[in-house]
Image (cartoon, rainbow, N blue to C red; front, side, top):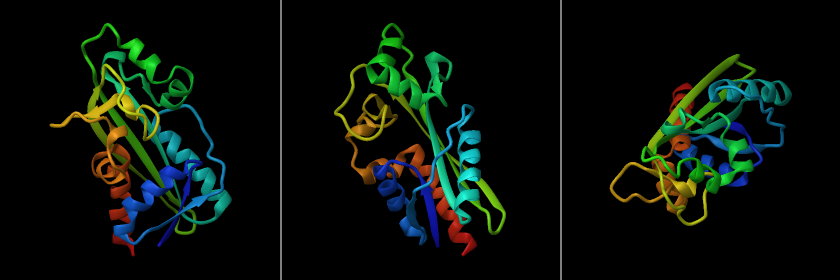
Length: 186
């Protein structure tokens, strides 16, 4: 089965291909515009997928993710991309500089729209962890250098191999749910 992934990020395409390959899903990058609206990640991903599917006239997949920081009452959440592009990792660390509560979670919503069979589904993934006091090595996406999943090694997402990250990440979890759904339909 083939699906189009609507993203401008080639690294994300490679990550998603690795996650969906065991399910027999061929992922291709779609040269379609991803419409960005403000709202919760589930709403953003579904609306963008619906609009892309209307243009592509075949199954498409769109994901949206957010970093939810407990001490900031879930901020930046669905505004993570904007917050990262304006204040970055250092700005977020500054907002938390006097707070001992570092709990956070990355959440991902993956929306699948098949306009031919009139199917719309959203799959959610989450990884809980904490915001580090100092960034790890650069790598990954956005806030990955300052986020470490709960676990024994405390390594930030940016320092994990693609395989390690896919095994535990919010995006990996959501896309595996999509893979299971698509495999069951074949």
